Length: 394
Image (tube, rainbow, N blue to C red; front, side):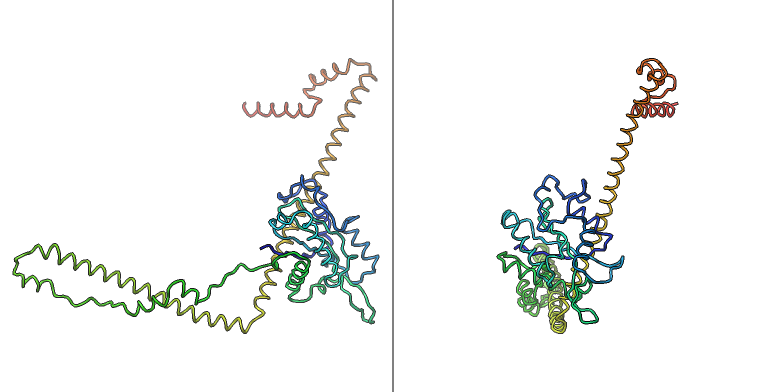
């Protein structure tokens, strides 16, 4: 069974540049190796972003007169990452895949009475391991100021103020998509399986083991002493003693040792089950008294997962920024080298003409021979490397 998956992440203004280039596919290279750029033409937008996320944020804030104190440490936008597993999208096809994300987009517009006008961008990526949507929005709450006037305020902490905010989000999203015809399980499922003590008893045959344990007799039965038996025989047949009595005696001792070992193992098993019954009762008592424990840990697990995703995204954005600047610098350096090459050729032509010296090729050849320097940079570098190698050999 597939799951309806929605996660939320929070960003400061400083994060928007890297997120914009990643979501809108503005980079040439990506640190995320799962991106197949040959499939990027299949990506599509449910809301196109006409500007950078920073500029789009400023325009929306001004247009709708959004209130709220914005500091450098403030989270000013959030991002829903909406998806399911790859098997689902493969089974439902392209049209239903698109309808899934359109349904999710409508859910976001209505959830917490947000409104479509506060969505900066909604981009569906089809070029990664599994289709998913990045939906960037401003966390706007509809409230009142101190004078009682209705205002719209940017307040991420208030938008997600409830302790179980993410559980509510998961519940609401699951209900919405299933109501629209997608047969999916709720996201963030638990894979833990609890085996009851009663089931354990059935599997291990505990009751039979307990009965067997009670019936086991650990004492050896009373048997005639072999020496006394030999006296009765008066030495008439020593072969009976060697071939029958002594081997049987050893077999009895061996079986006795194995019996003791079996008794010990069965005893441990019964003790284990008795303890398990005790702990099971205590567990049920604790769960009955603390019904919110599961929800609390589920929320914490989700929060830590989101924080981990944020840190990963920050690192990716950092390296994408570095790649972007390096490409920009390399492009500029190539332009400088090309321009210098043209200028050098013009200079040689001007010198030969100005001072009526020999032909350009002769002039260049004489320069290279007399100065031991090549005009071509690549040839000069290779020549210097050969000199260094020769020096090392000497």
